[in-house]
Length: 141
Length: 141
DNA sequence: TATTGTTATACTCTATAACTATA
DNA sequence: TATAGTTATAGAGTATAACAATA
Image (tube, rainbow over all chains, first blue to last red):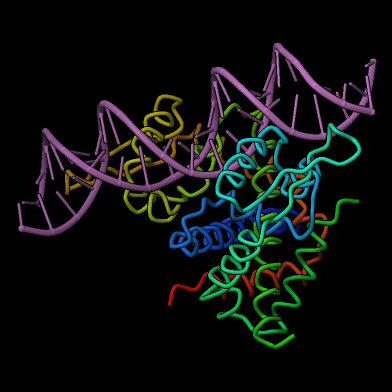
């Protein structure tokens, strides 16, 4: 088997493992937040709103189409977790966590970390290594 | 910040990176196979049929509900990529690649490996390391 | 009675296109 | 005329529940 073929089959195997691991991560995430009564995208959005964030920027951070955020923001606002505010440029709507939103955010973080294979099955060194490799894979240059 | 808090935030960051990387991998997969005129799940199934495989086993390998495989197998059979056969236990249906299916399988493997960040952005050493860590994360003990 | 595959249906997540309000 | 957000709609991917055939 040539080196090119090996690379090809290694890549295929790795990509499948990566997708499986991520699916496992997503499943864990979804199961963890069930008791909190919040949807997966809503929880992801909450985790991404570290400070007041324009909707378009948030969509970009989450790699979502901006249109998708409208309904989600409606949902979050209706639940009292988030408020839409407007600054000088009245086109831009900024999402900000309410006190309730911050509390929910903390609960999500805690629930999701609990029992996560990333925290239970590998050690600090491997976590750092994994972060380094994923960073290389994600670099957008 | 306590060690427990650090672990929690590291885990959160890592899980987001992992999901993003996998999404990138999936996007690349989807884009790569467009010219082949086959759907993503069909291509994933083809890649998993290395030898004649009972439908239930295939579903398990792909972490899909068996019911989902019925329509997919219909699609693959209609395209002439796969045949359903039956052995001694007539409940079990075995999927097997046709010659055309094997050719398609090879084309998929080649298309998907081309330009994949896993093969272009990290080296052999990191690929091996990544495989080791993902294996640990996926171990089902 | 347990297991395999099938059918019909429904749900979640996300994108696309056309629109409006503001700049 | 360009940009931010919205609306309505559609699509992919997958699960659930009830079922038929075989063991």
